[in-house]
Image 1 (cartoon, rainbow, N blue to C red):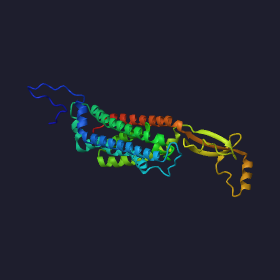
Image 2 (image 1 turned 135 degrees about the horizontal axis):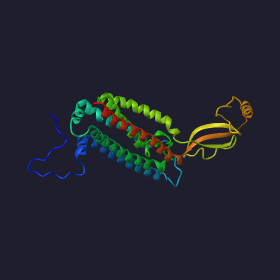
Image 3 (image 1 turned 90 degrees about the horizontal axis):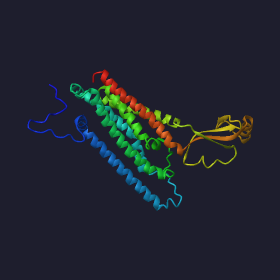
Image 4 (image 1 turned 45 degrees about the horizontal axis):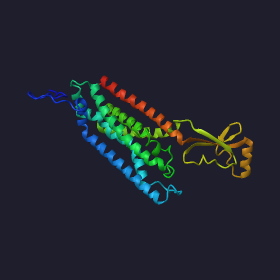
Length: 326
């Protein structure tokens, strides 16, 4: 005989007034309390590390006379690089260890079959599990992304990290959260389809790697690059060498706007090179670039794409659960 999800008060005792968290929400939280506390502890540890290391770097730069004196770092502090790498791996970790086992574990151990015999509808049970998991990911990644941006932004000219690189762009603003939510809910879907924890975790890991590689190729398509043009033999404008600019492509061009590859007239001798330039009518340098002021718009555009995909996968999970036995 199966047990029910709610417990009736004993005879002679008055039912206690439900607290803030009760019913199915309380059941899901209790089932995953160890995971919840582990994630909370890791977030607190990560946040404390960022705050401490930022303070240590600020003290070091103050001792070097920054910002009153020009200071250059040969490389970013190792602590910064380690934390940036850890945050870059966080979406994969959440997808593999939090998303993939969420439903697959219940299917493998028979918990899903037990729950579906109770009075609580299957879709409501899945919605509660999804709500707990994605809320945990949302809060934890928002905290870490906000703190990492607080560290990076004031010192971005010194840390030698282009803002469009994955270590900055994907770890700040809404991007860390959006990427984590997508990979987590994808892990949930993969686990539900494979029905076994270890195969689901492996499949999610490789899927996450593919997504991150593909996202790296897609990142510079989130906005239209700007163009700057200057005479062929003139000095390079300061804007092109600015740390706020990420160069997308470089050309040489004619007065009417026809573009040639940067190495088009890279001849062995200066005379041959000049002849090539004259033959093609090349008079300008042309650079396509992204400006730092484009970063928020690009991040929110990317986040919108990922959050839309997250919603689609979550709807698929709920739809599939009503069409197939768990």
